[in-house]
Image (tube, rainbow, N blue to C red; front, side, top):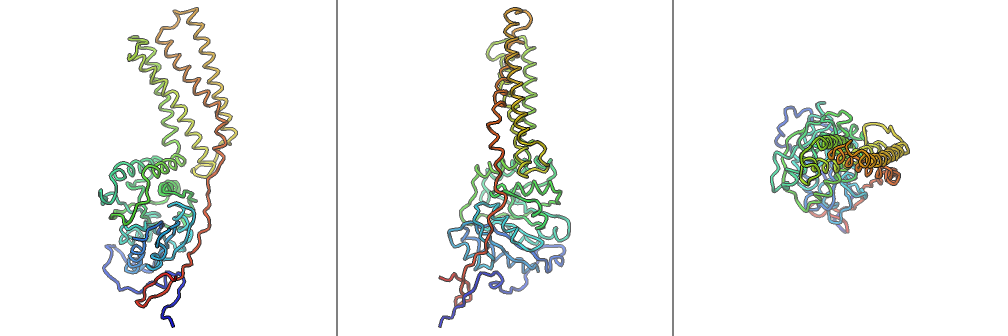
Length: 436
């Protein structure tokens, strides 16, 4: 007769009592005694680290006196991640919709505790800092606490491009998108503690790595209290799933949708205003008119480029704002119906084309019959303006062609996540192993 016992996946069935150890440097540990918390790990092929992360987390929770559990959200692993997570003492939930954000959203919904902590299952985050992240929440001083990594990051733990370019740039844009309500330095930290109900109210919709930025921007919009605490950052165990450029573009797209004025509307207005200023300079410049490289020639050329880019970038901002409002990615409600927006673009474009045609005809008549009425500098500047107006007008007249792209909404709901029913056995030494 076999001496093994068959068990169904259950985190509590594999947790053994551990003695208390040293404290965590907290001013008032008593506040954490008995507090219920769930730690969520998104996981995709992390067999080298997930078991270790789960065990370390459970040890930290017990030593701090927390009533905690660990959820591992498997996102399509093809290795031994699930069995090692179970062996470590975690409950495993499967979310088949791919993506970092999809996994975390499933974890937040599955958690039943007031407080939730999210971290990566790759060994990079200082899991011993969990009590320090949780304390401001329990004290009532914060709704969301971030583990700031940059002060401890090295070239071995974080690529130079991420440390000095990517993360600071995205953090700046996130701050701008919230009108500088945030005072953080590491917007891309995936080590966060928060009040579950407050985050669920935000209706987060991202499925990829851009989830980190959306979570912060929406939290700032909702006036949640956000703090940042310094934590250590270790070298990753296993192969990284990050894609520097594609994930960066996803973050940029998300920020543009959430706050189009940050990188579209305002720059478009500034570019157009600068173009008008250059036309005035070119018109009043009497030296080297029409000569390549002269002030007049340079001003007209630059103004011609900016006068096309500026309005188009501004209109892009308007489109993004409409898109954000229509699919619920904006803090404001939809004000302009799609039909009205497209009609405005069309008629503004028609007006610009008409003005440019009338302007060209008037200019030709004036040059032929009254050549002394305009200087050469004035003629060149007016010609540049009319040419730009005609090009922008033609593009806006074609606005109805882009309307189908504004009506397709992204998937806002995830497939239902399922608990992984993995049968396990106990070997002679009391360790869990998969049942074959």
